[in-house]
Length: 588
Ligand code: ARG
Image 1: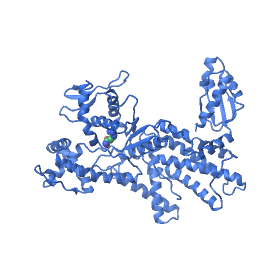
Image 2: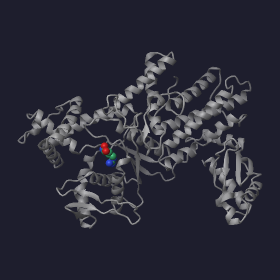
Image 3: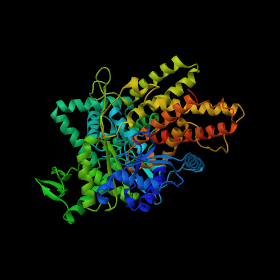
Image 4: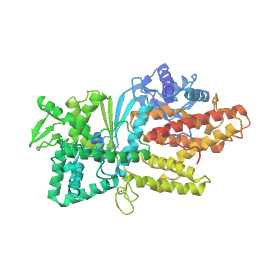
């Protein structure tokens, strides 16, 4: 379906043209003075110069041609030259009913669905997930769902950090603690054990210990680097050990993502890209795309229009080791071979922006991806504590993801226990759902690139621009619909007739904006647009609710129309929170 605003714009284009003006002046926006009108067009002002006329005259001319049309009920020319408009109610009701009957609720499904890969999460094997990984997971999951909702074919790839120095550290530490293990026996000929020689908790202790030790002891660090090198060059024992590390760690990582309602289609890692590297590098050399700079192999990625220095993309160090960028380029080769994506979206900390600028340019320049492939970096800011510094535990340490989630759930549980009389089990489940909405909405309602303050009190509040407020609104609608059914009403085949009151019309208008909001969120890769939209929608609903007797309405036709409006409102809200990656309980 077209967006409401496009339909109004089409009417205005006609009117501009009939009045003798250029139709491209007919740009319509939501009104920034909702007390005066619902939509507005400032085209008359823009045209004043061309037509050497006072804007108000142009506006009046256009308004004259707007008298007879289906979607605008009132149009008014206002000084200095605004065209203020109100939507025709019947038209809005018709739009809403059409939306309600449509499978995708009026969303324009992509005509040529793209193959999109969303690269997000990026956890590092053997290191515990911490709050730094929270944003990647939350934003990436939402971006993936938004793309899917628009009808694209989307794959989420976790892109594990499973090939770096941390592996060498763990191997070195294990060798120190348990030198008798067969992985360190160079003459070992048999199969390696099926069981890992450590548990997840041991693993989590080993990494920080080794990392700290290496910082103090140069020889240990050298050994870890050498261990990394041996692993990367196919050492049998280390490879077997590495597989254990990855398996145990990934199991644990999966549990964490499950708690966050985050799901990946691909569990690929940096290691999967390694086999593409030798040929890739050879290709760069053969085609003269890379050159040696102080012994290192680099690709120049500067462009004429650059306003700041973009350093070359490092491909290989002088000792032959490949780097982060090498892996990302090789991963693009692998993706091109396996999926031929039209678009790859990277959801990563914005401090890595330069890295991705270099990688994207190198990929285009060397032809790893096609010229038309869209490579998009969605960089996110830092999640801060109330003190404005990166979020920490009360003791000042790095906050583990599972602890953060547990804290929020507990907070929600307490609030629920104060308010409601539900049994323990239900309260437990519901508080998890609401807790998740608090965390995710708290994050997603901010523009991704901005830093934000993780404020537990604010995020868990049932009032204001929060996840719990949105859920509360949905639950309120569900409860009305349930009561209506208990009173003998049915939810089938209802139509919205139009609005009796301002608040009803305002709610209808908000509901009708669904496709515009979702499409904007997709085009701009911006989940916060959905949050902003559902906050407005929830407010509009609550205002309507407070001003209207829905279940006590005596005019049964009127009541059916209300119920029809409630059903679409609920459906739109639920579709939206689904793209944010959380859901609403039945009651709370
Ligand atoms: N593992 C990386 C980190 O912790 C993030 C990976 C981001 N994705 C990518 N394709 N480089 O910083």
